[in-house]
Image 1 (tube, rainbow, N blue to C red):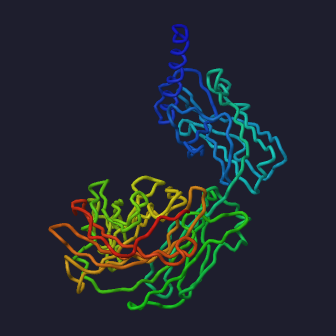
Image 2: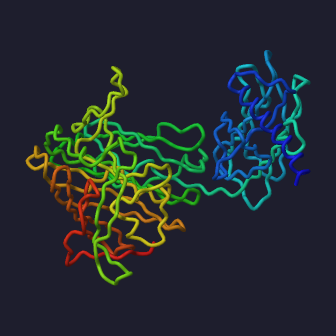
Image 3: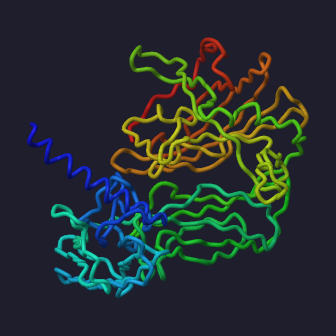
Amino acid sequence: MKAITKIFIPLIILFVAIWGCESDQITGESTYNGQAFMRFYLITNSNDEPIDDGVIEIGVLPEEEYTHKSLKPLKIPVTLTYPNIDNEITAEFSQNLSGEFNGYSINPSSLSFNKDKLIDTITISFTERWDAEDINKISLELTNCSDNSVSLGQLNDYNKNNILDITLGEVLTTCTFSSNRIEITGEAGEQVEFEVLFDNGFLPEEIENMELFNEIKGFEYTLDRISEEGNNESITYVMTLSDDIQNDEVSYTTTISLNETSEYSPTGNTILQIIKPLNIARDKAIYTSANFYDLSNPYYRTYGENWMWSSSNEACGWKAFNAFTYPVVVEKDDDNAILYSDNGTEDESDDIYHHAFRIGFNSNLTGRTTNAFNLKRWFNNESTNSDVSPGFNVPEALEFYPKDGISETEGTVLVIPQIITVSSQEGNSHNISISGEGTYEEISSGLFEITLEFRATNEELFGGTQVSYYKIYNSNSYGGDPDPLTDGCIEAVDL
């Protein structure tokens, strides 16, 4: 054991020294006095995806072999560690392909560095798909540097990073809307933008003439593609209203769904609704929604009871649940906008406004979901990741209508109609239309109770529309179970 320790400690010291001084070089602090060296610096996250170029993760070893499973351009940082650099340094690299695939390009053809630029980036862009059953490997090697004192590769014999082997693996391309619902005012000429996201990228040639959407028009408009994100990860579209539909007493809805194609599979938010809602007069100074969230508490939740079948006792009963609850952020000119924060500045462009009568349910962890409307208990074998089951988060969920438009203690509440998506752990996706209505009232000082009838429609899962009943509270101090019901008992279904 002692012999191992004597060898291991110097290696660690060398590793830390090299990493530490490279970090200082990158931040502009020239404290490294050893031999200059250059290396490939491709590092990946826990999902084996490349981390953005130009990002240095201290203590993470760069990859020497990497399998690329995306159509997005692959960006490969090359770093230079050099004591007191004061001149321009250039470097060359070679590329070699093992296999028949040639639908890619590599830029730039050479690398350059100076005292303000100690990272340069090689980008591999793809113009065609490849067959993962074929063995296609791109090998890059640092071959020459204009400064002979620079070592090509890290200063050790076990992980030099002067060669990088990239295998082209299987690519599964998907598409999703960035949201499931957008509201408009209904003015002729009004424009609204939305994005289609491609998790593993896309090829512009494939998208160009593809019938990406199926549209059910509730009003007249034109739809144009206006931009493509540079890394082939998203496309932005703009909808322009052709007619004026500003009628406060009528709601208009257009539904756009993503088509299944041979190249791109819809996932997550597969349906987008563009809605001109009803407009009912309310005094926004009542600010009903503020009773149901507290942004000073990152763990704030609303609590509820859902009338459900319990397989453990073979009876129906109230099932307790909770969901992280947040305000709905709106623009300053929204009819129901309330100023939440001016961020301590006189600049109005950074002011934050909340909807006075809406709340939503969302997770405070990236990629995760909360339990909006207790829906996770409605299913067996569900996936709870937001990329495939965004419907477990409902960012705009409930809207309050104070009695006579002015009551601070009671009124009606609506489930904001929309289509949500949930999926099984195997990726089987289901679109569910949700709606509902009920009442709310302050039952004791500061304690509000919502009594809600909730409707969910999906022919395959529920055989049509399933109705469920809830009590929802803004605090967990509401006491025991509500009185039992005589109907409306629902049972979990398999996804």
